[in-house]
Length: 84
Image 1 (cartoon, rainbow, N blue to C red):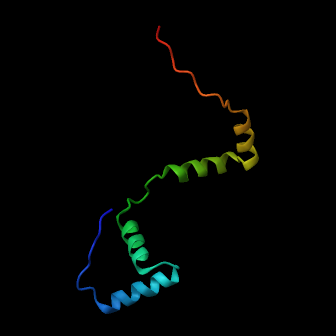
Image 2: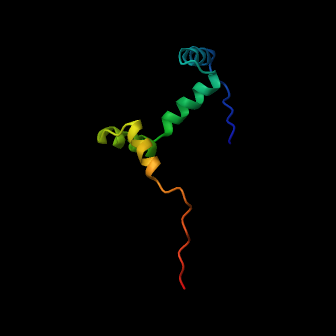
Image 3: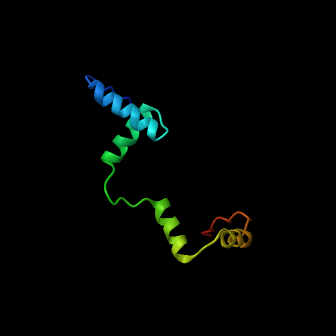
């Protein structure tokens, strides 16, 4: 993981970052990481987990449905395909 040093940061900016971090219940360092992440993340980026969660909400799947699917799932390991 990379390390970044920011030099000559004005005191009022540092103070504002500390206040913002406290409002979000994070450390100043964690708040800066979040700000930088949001600044460089492409707008409208599709995240797989979010897409799957939205799909299951649209289909109306419940926890009971997922449990029923897990109970019917074959638990034996798959046998490799034979080419002989």
